Amino acid sequence: MSRFSNREQAGQQLATQLPHFQNQQVLVMPVPNGGVPVALPVAKALKATVLPVPIRSLNVPWQQETIFGYVTHQGEMVLNQPLVGQMRLTLPEVHRIARKEQLTLQSDLESWGAVVRDSLQGKTALLIDDGMHSGWTMFSAVEAVRHLGASRIVVAVPVTHFRAKRFVSRHCDEVIALLTEDIALYQIGNYYEDFPELTSADIKHLLKTVSSARPTAA
Image: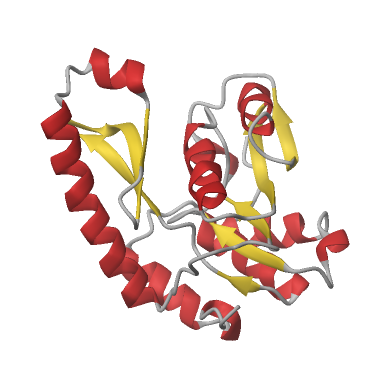
């Protein structure tokens, strides 16, 4: 089933579908963590600045693989309310988890040298991840970037399920995908020969490899 050698190679392929964004005011915004190595070849091809989307997942404490929402560096939350109810998470629990993850995100952004601008007005935000399964993560990223005032939001991924693509496309200006599946994806990693877990330290190293990793003042 593997379609891509690794995230970097997928990013190189994705970049070939995005030449119309050259010479535009584009900000390449990968979704941490898996979107970063996909985004770097795209940013290089477009000669664009890289800024990770400032969001971090909120996981159910007793079921860490289950994500019930995301929090931004500013503390705004995007919650899967039906799942919050299903998991019987209380509002104080949600806020406690969100505050902890917000602080971790702020620390990560500082470590990465990623300075989030107060406003993205006038910018096209090109959101990139390694794939979309349900589309919930990318939807949360779109909402975070919309809150920052991006004038146009475009999503680009190597692989997506068609339902995820349809869902996300309702909330952004355009969705670009190399591969759109109508069968269950199960795990995005199935489409990659090499699909390692990425740590904050890995992201820091990756961002240091590109001169455009540190945004300049708008």
